Length: 199
Image 1 (cartoon, rainbow, N blue to C red):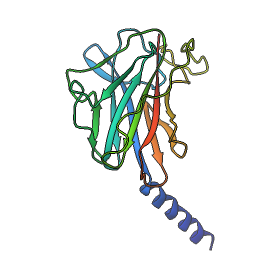
Image 2 (cartoon, rainbow, N blue to C red; image 1 turned 120 degrees about the vertical axis):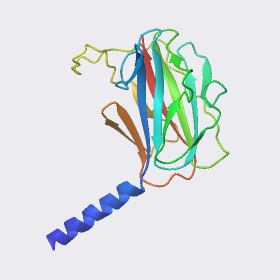
Image 3 (cartoon, rainbow, N blue to C red; image 1 turned 135 degrees about the horizontal axis):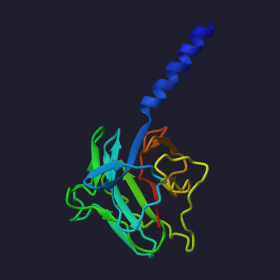
Image 4 (cartoon, rainbow, N blue to C red; image 1 turned 180 degrees about the horizontal axis):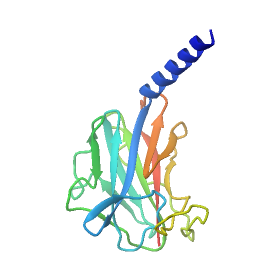
């Protein structure tokens, strides 16, 4: 009897995990001529060049905006420079910016850029979201409790966070990758934010 209950519980958990909708985000930084996945809490330096890798297990539409530390909102994706096609297909990895010649360069006063991801399972509806205003005066801080062999400054406040409509989403870290999942199928756009810390 105990084995049957355990097997049923395991089967239910497996079915739930398979039906969950997932979004995976990886921050990459250009080091020399090579793109490397970095910790989402890495405190970046002025002039660093970065991009995101993005993957879902469902079809939908993606919109990405940035609210920089200067207070200026910018549409990051889709744009003519970063790629116009914002349709995402399950199990395919996307690069943001979508073109090989475009990159995001870190600039502006030290603090946190708020990169807002809007994922819409349906065409139409919400197409962008400016995100919250960053709190003035907050500066990235190195978390001394996180030991890093390379001496990187890691700010545990940075990385992916729930947005206004993301209360039911689950955020997990898997190495440098952030996994955002919804236990139920998405029927409306969801918004979550990625706090990008820089000096």
